[in-house]
Every structure is written in structure tokens, then in C-alpha cells.
Length: 237
Image 1 (cartoon, rainbow, N blue to C red):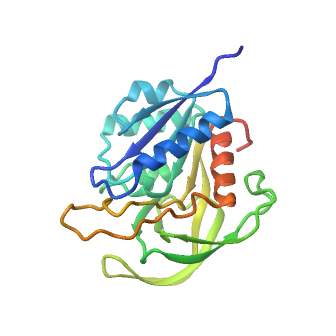
Image 2: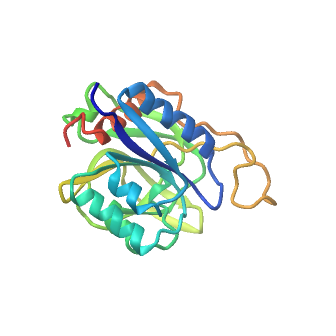
Image 3: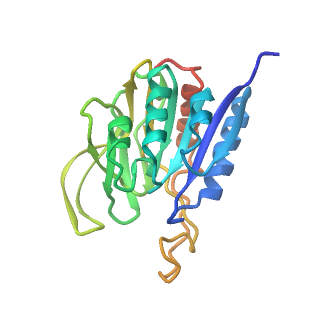
């Protein structure tokens, strides 16, 4: 039997503002179902040897401090052919000036949890084969396009008021994209919020509704499955 791929699954946040237990379960299950993948789980990016030694990287993080050493390891991993499947709040990077230049985007804000329409921007991409536009209950991420070279696969059109007293013009906003970095690259999927009532930045904040986002939608399960396959090198860039 051939050697299984080693995946680094990095999930977590110092703010505990998402249901990271849920994400670990679902993403581990997706990799298990993909067969031939063994996942090592981490809470941050600081094990540079593990990053450089893995075959694929899957992350769902938020506001994690990332050292210069870890940032350099991430870039080196990608440049030599590694693939990074990054979900939702991964591009919320706690003021880090290096990671957005690797990921391609930086999270700015989002309006309240709502239903919005997601359009298929590039239907010819193999990751989107047989996928049609869909409505989703989720956090609609507004991002800064830092590098200007992302290849948008899914988008929504939105403008309005968002948290932090921010106002955004009506425009197309990427919900899924790819970005080449050296011989490897990034696949980023902005969709996928989930929280329990007690998943909140500060314990004194009021409980919030339990949100599961798109995780039980067949189209989202397909996007996760194909994202895992892409990170494993089983789908073309």
C-alpha cells in the first residue's frame, strides 16, 4: 500500500468566536472520507517543521498571531509546490502584514449573519463542475484584495453597512478563489461560519443564536470535498 498523505489541519482562535470543535470534526471526516490522508491537528502555525514536512495544509483560523518564522515556512511550503486550502476566517489575521500577501486577501468586516446569493464566477473550472448558483445563510465576508492576482471562482454582489461602522459599495465580492504561489498555491473559501451560543469573543457578551451556516448543504459538502481533493493534489490547479 502506498504511503498516505500527511495533512496539517490547523484550527482555532484566541477569541474562540467560532465553533472550532465542529470544524475539526467535519474537516477531519472529510479528509478521512477522501481516503489515503492522515491528519495531524494543530491550534496555530508555529510548528514550521510540520508545515514544511506535510503534503497538504487545511486551515480554519481567526486572529492567530503568526511569527515571522512561521510566515516564512508557509511561503516556502507553497513556493516548492504545497497546496493550502483555507476556509472562512483564515484571512482574519490579527494585524499580520505578511500573511495577506501570501493568502492574497485580508478580512475587513461582514454584515450581520444573513441569506445571500452566491454566483458561479468560473463555471469551467473543474472545482465547480455541475455546481450552480445558490443561496446560503452565512457571514458575508468583505475582503481587501491585497495582491490583485486572485482567480475568483465564486462571488456575491453586495454593498451596505457592516460591523465596525464600515460601509461598503455595491460590488462583486469573492467567496472562493485560487492564487498561485511559486509551484503551489492557495484555495480560499470564504463561506462556512458556524457558532454555538457561547462561541463569542468575550464571555460577558450575550449569547447569540446557534448558527450552522452552509455545512449541511449538499453544495457546500461538495465544495469541501473538492477542496480537500485539490489540496491533496488530486485535482488540477
